[in-house]
Length: 185
Image 1 (cartoon, rainbow, N blue to C red):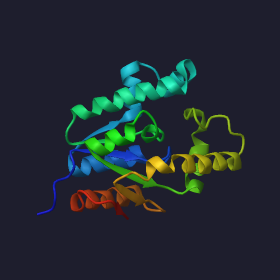
Image 2 (cartoon, one colour):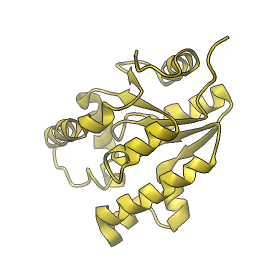
Image 3 (cartoon, one colour):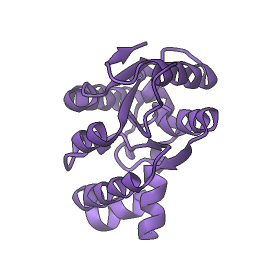
């Protein structure tokens, strides 16, 4: 008999890594509820993430984010797609590791920059870069800055050029077969 699936699974990784897309699919596969943390923040505060950044700044956004992350503790059998910076602030990584299983979706800086370049106007932290090269440099620097937090994930999945369905299947196997040890796939 395989170990039980953790009751809370937190997907972490840089913006554009596919946490929401993979999380929705994985939740369907394992019969869990899905929560997108950014959507929960927007619903809770009746403001878009872009508006929160514009009106209150990043520091207040991070406080709101931590408050909403704590709301996810009321759920069992849930997969939460976090924001890219969620693990790096307010003790969030410790909370997620203590209360659930964290899974880091690793995507190369080049792929992230390519994805984000198309969505820059919707992403406050990357809005305003004029070239793909500037964006790539920013992504590389942020990945280095966030490495300490991302490296604390209980499971790391290197996505490479895998399709979303394959990534979700890989994660399903990992969480079903390896409850407590750090795993890399």
